[in-house]
Image (cartoon, rainbow, N blue to C red; front, side):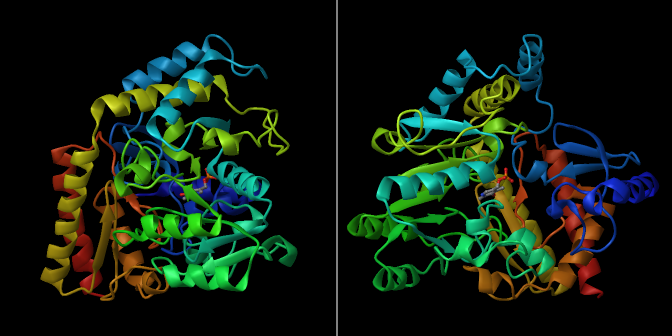
Length: 429
Ligand SMILES: *Cc1c(COP(=O)(O)O)cnc(C)c1O
């Protein structure tokens, strides 16, 4: 397998782009080597500029849940393109996508579309503060909520991979109202409420995917919600990754919890830049033009993006692939555990719905500290062996692998073979 053209583009890219990438997770910092440049993708496969084709378990970090270039999505956006790209005024498709979203999430009477997950969460946080009149927000170590200043502390994947404690350029004042708790530990939340009386709410990934996959214990979210209600604080569920992925109604549907404020992104745009935040009417009443919380966007509700979102979600609802995702993830877990056993490599596998990944550790992983016991050098070896055997993974130990409904039985066989080869390579380190 050759990467000559990717290498060449990487060198060229370094001149006018930062690290030749537009998001640090795409750099291969933690696995060594240089990033691959992609030429095209179709269905479950992705092809780089050297014409190497891989089964894609990155899926643009989640959005491409149907696989790449699904016929119905392509048709919808091609049709939308003919009418214009952006108007700065309302279109009917915004209403259609809003209805699909509000029907899927019982806690959302109204929704506001934005252009990214980061924007969705920063607006959701502002809304929680506007509604409660309180300033402090609790987040969990290892959860990532986009790159806004206030939440860029103890923020999982990208930062964990680069071993940054937070980020340069974030003033202390921006994080002084952010409190950090431990995932799966309600007591750590309660301790903050005992010390502070101005907490607006708690934000979390309902199933964490940005420290690798970390699953909440059975009633964690329910207990958290009940406790927050008793304190008059809001539950802000960041479903940017899990929305329409864990279930059509997100992790909330699966876990039997209704958020006060829900943030969405990734799958909702089917590969186009769409984010959203929403809540019940009483809370959304705060948002301008109805209320005094300002939030705006020149390209928000972009007609091409709305068409992509509607087509993706409509097809997703029709396919209802969630049971199949679960079965497929279980099969991948078995591949990983069986080959780890065969080659005597310490591996813990976490999975939930269509998100799965191995940690190279013998520790059970239920929080960020435990996730960090993983041997990232072993992951790097594993990663490159998977690439060489035709499977594209996120280039970080602390990212989930994502499944698409386009994945075939044949793909699974190839994944099994690649895992066996990759685990063997790890055992020889
Ligand atoms: C990806 C992600 C974000 C940020 O979304 P962007 O579209 O990258 O800004 C926020 N929260 C979670 C849980 C995510 O996975």
